[in-house]
Length: 425
Image (cartoon, rainbow, N blue to C red; front, side, top):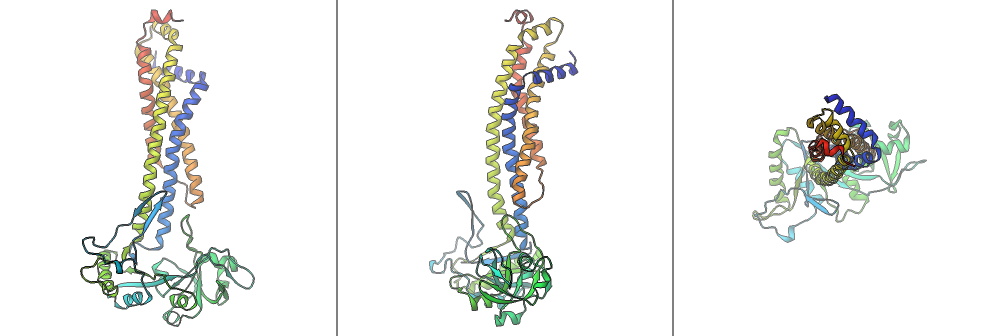
């Protein structure tokens, strides 16, 4: 029997047992779909995270008053602390918010070739209105300074930036995010310039409109109204709210030196003794994203484990089906051997059947997994993702499953005595 004949006979046998084949294919397909689907979804999430945290460049870092804990599900992962654990941490100094005076002193004293930005979060989930229209209650208000736009990757579509006089006076001027301007003034967002709008009930004159920055599942950077931090201090309660300090270095190779200088500048401002640990933390945008990605990677490992368990069950089921096939076709095997068929040919036929069933399940599972994963990607506003590496791994693993499941039945079939097989009832 030639190789071509073995392949043809394997295909005909698979087609002749559609129900049994379909059940096995479905088990394998669901296992691969779970794996590929979750991996595709995680890839989409990682892509969305990279876009979200691109608001701060690789040459930027921020100073915050407490370490950040990111939780996904029941577990949590902590961003690496920059304080020295060997030093004693004075409880009275721990987790003190960064005050206006501290942020202002840092900006004045920080002697390094870098831009320093001070900002504070204003009212959140507010409604912005003009004379005719209003937005949904999903707008964030932020108070910044003249460096805030560059620090956070925003670009003006028209108008001007906040200047130092705006900051010092705290007057009611603002810059509208692209989504806010579109909601209130249509596609021609520049119509908003010099208009008066109300943000959380307070009147502001629009001095600038931002270009579209895009959104993701985690952030919408265009739903923002930017004013000065002194305006937020003047019009809204800020007790207990921490100030944010951002630093953007001119040369990325000087990042470590800039961070060291920032610590040395901020420690005296925070009134820390030489033997006390830092009660503030340095965060880089990529470090926060990596914490998210690491947590998502754990989900990927869980998906791989689930897929492996499913494939193990599929392998056992496939082996049982192949053993049943050997018993059902005992007389056929005896006839093949009686007319000169070799044990090698019979072994090939059963191995081909087993591998073909596994590969059909793999292909179906990969297609379903990519579709399911990219449905998640649609909600995250990411592009179409194809996990080529995991697709290749899935095909290889399923081929191995088919080979493993079919090996024993194939060897058993090839060793049948032709006389005994022909007499089998």
